[in-house]
Amino acid sequence: MKNLGILLLLIVISFASCSKPDEYYKDLLIYSDRNNPGKLQNLKGSNGYYRLKIKYDIPPNNSVSKIVLKGATDSLVFDVPEGKSGTKDSLIVKDLMETNYRYQIYSLNKDNVKSIKRELSFKIYGDRYKSSLTTLNVRSKATVNTNDLRLIFNGDRANVLAKSKFEYTDRANKLVKLDFKNPTDTIVLPNYKTGTDVYLSNGFIPTSNSIDTLYTTKKKLILP
Image (tube, rainbow, N blue to C red; front, side, top):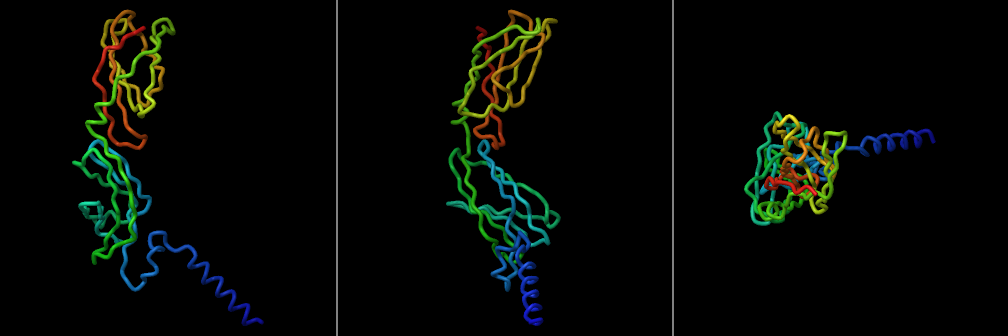
C-alpha cells in the first residue's frame, strides 16, 4: 500500500509539471524530436489606408528567425533580429489594394522549420472609402457661459469619428485652431466672436482599431 501511495504521488507530480507547458511551445510538443520555433503570441491585426499592421509577441530563446505572411497569391517574409527575441513587436505591410485580405501567419527558425499557423483577415480602405466621408452638419447652436459657442452635430453612425479640427475667430479677432480627439456630437468653442465663420474638418476611421485617420475637406459650417 505504501508503494502504491508513492506511485500515485509521482504520477500527480508528473501530471502537474506537464499540465502548464510553456505557452509558446505547448502546441509543438508532439514534434519533440524536431527543433520547432514557437508561434507568435497575442497576434492582432489592424486595417489601414492601403496598408495593414500586425502586432505580436516574439517567442523567447531566439527560436524564431523569420515571420511569414502567406496570402492567396503571394507570401511576405520578414526577418526577426536576435535582439527582438522575447519582446513585443509589430510589422506593417504597405502598397495594398482597397479590398479584403486573408493571411496565414507563422514563424520559421534558422532551419526553416514552421510553427503552427495562425490566420488574420483584413479589410483595407482607400480612396473609395475616403470619398464616402463628409463633414458633419450642425443640428443646433447655442451661446453658453456668455462668450462660448456650443454646437450640436448630426453624427455619422457608419464610421468612427476620431478627430475634429475647427478654425474660428475669437473675441480678440485672432484665428483659433482647435482640435478635438475622439469628439462627441456636442462641441464648445470658447470665446467665439459672434457672427464670424466657423470651419471644420472631420477625421474618420472605419473601425476603432484602424491605424490611419482620413480627413474630410475643410468646410465652412452653416450655423442655424
